[in-house]
Length: 79
Image 1 (spheres, rainbow, N blue to C red):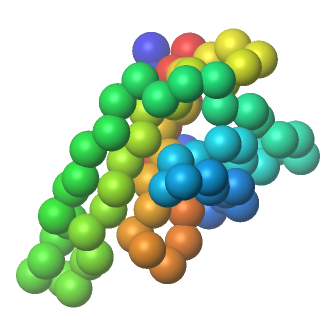
Image 2: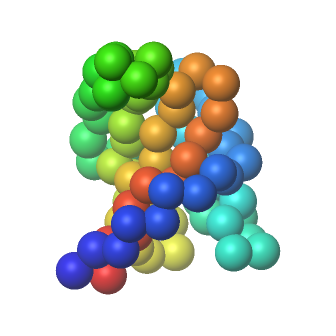
């Protein structure tokens, strides 16, 4: 099961890849990147292109985060 969150998060990036992000009053460390892809977005509403990362957390759990070059969001949490 998954839960869509789509909330802004602070992300520490190293060499263009997320290393950790702050969510629910704690830092989540990224142990590995499972997948990466781009989405064009709703161009007809001037939505920017987004870069998505599906990441494995060092503490356990899988998350999807994305950047639209202005900010980072936590998009989805896998149960």
